[in-house]
Image 1 (tube, rainbow, N blue to C red):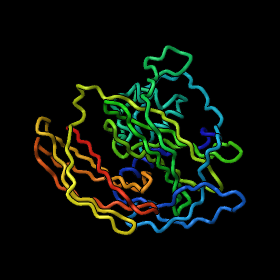
Image 2 (image 1 turned 30 degrees about the horizontal axis):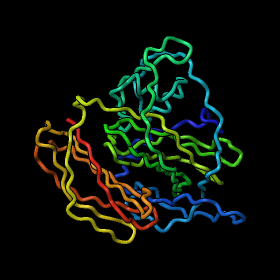
Image 3 (image 1 turned 60 degrees about the vertical axis):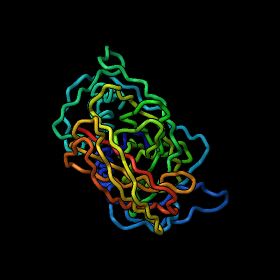
Image 4 (image 1 turned 45 degrees about the vertical axis):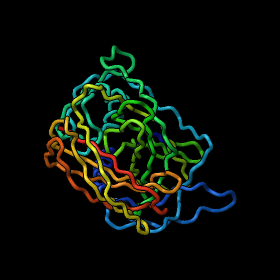
Length: 329
């Protein structure tokens, strides 16, 4: 099925990622064994509930085989000013106007894909074949891991792609297009994967998350391609530096608890929004869970806020928990 016939549900992704604060559950995609039929999946509760996940049974497959899908159509010229509506996603808007997501992000540098505001106006740039006012930026290189997908009880699919920033500067608006391809090289579905935080610090890795509402059935092969990765200007005042101190980490069965404090740097301005994300990794360094923590309390420079975050595993035992954060004025 082509991407045009499957409208993206980025709004679902955005709200679900915010509710990633509640939990993750599913099952990891494993390679199919030759001559062995795929087992029936254990249907699990989607990760926005508070219940930890049981040990999963895979229903989809990884593969090293190159199953490249058909190329998407080229954009056409439709310059426009568009007001965001309820349920909109940037990917859906791009497809509606037959342009690329990169062009929308380039034309609207202040937009945060994680938090679209109803009524906010977007510049829809001119596409190919006209004098485009906003050229598509070339994304900075980002190291993308292999996407891992986990089915839900509603036959949907959560896919996680670990993105690592190899640069000596922070990145924002990092995103990847996750494509599900079958054995016939047909596109089953496509969704945009974005991180739970907009900021990716230098040298750090953070999972990009995509949700496929489904139903997804049969053997599929998830692939990921970088869409956007924009550098943050050194003199930008849109983010505030914070320091994170971990006081205690406990790993019990399929979940982990991390406790500590986050503090706005003494030389920074007051932060009115602070976001943290606890990332759970298995022994092989693969992301297997994450949970977001938010605070809208004003934090003066040098002031610390305590946090306690419980994150659930997608199946394997948690070997390590990392906490990343960002703050804004």
